[in-house]
Amino acid sequence: MINPMDQLYTQALNQVNNARPNNLVNTEESNPAEFTNLLKDSLMTLEGKQAESAQAVQSLIDGTADDLHTVMIKTTEAQLSLEVAVQMRNRCLEAYNEIKNMQF
Image (cartoon, rainbow, N blue to C red; front, side, top):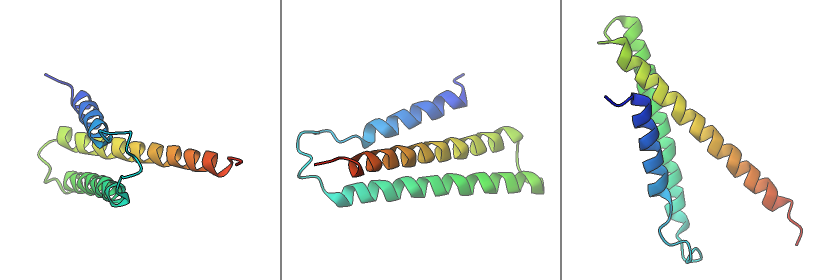
């Protein structure tokens, strides 16, 4: 049986690979709305995972949860999603600061 963390890692890699543009040569013609939609979708996914985690914890507290295993998986998914989002934000800020500090 595959470890659930391995499945999450594989899913995250697949999402990153699918998010890459197929043609990096024609970046001039890329649509800014595509990036905006990708960012909105990612944030909505993050928010959804956070809500699922909160709901799973609440159901565990209420006693309506089926098992602890599912609750732990959902909270770990939410935690990993948040960590990825924070790392992406940090990388974007680093890139912005590098561009800002460039001298032309």
